[in-house]
Image 1 (cartoon, rainbow, N blue to C red):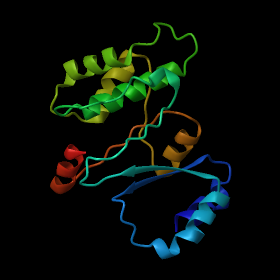
Image 2 (image 1 turned 90 degrees about the vertical axis):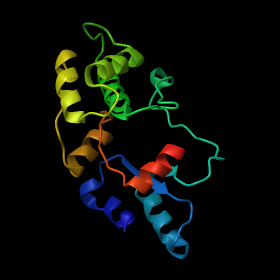
Image 3 (image 1 turned 135 degrees about the horizontal axis):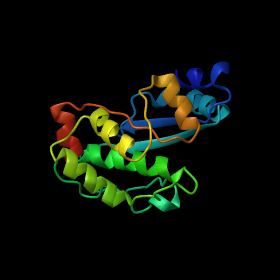
Length: 175
């Protein structure tokens, strides 16, 4: 199914990425050949993330660019994932502006400012973006899936939100 979508003519000019979130136990291995061929023909880059019960895995990292190598959320505690996500997106957006007036704030300082303003118990990303994008003379907009794809293929940073069930949250914390 996904190779069909990626091969549609309306997406022919897009850079295409497929993010695979997997438990490592494929249920449709017999049909994988045509899917792989279709994705390859559509020039789709695949990014995968393994989620499971084992903590004995070798992590792989995808770096957006050299500037942001150290901007990772290692051993994050409390509800500050929103701050990491917003700080990363704001930092990346500002780095796109050549000779930006006011310079480029450090990711860690930016994240700390966000946490100081909104706390360690989570926050609505839209509220955080409203405050900090104004403060740093940036703008943001909510987009649908097609518009998000256009933003991604234009190398613009995006933020997305998602919710986990209690069981998924527990598994994610262990990871």
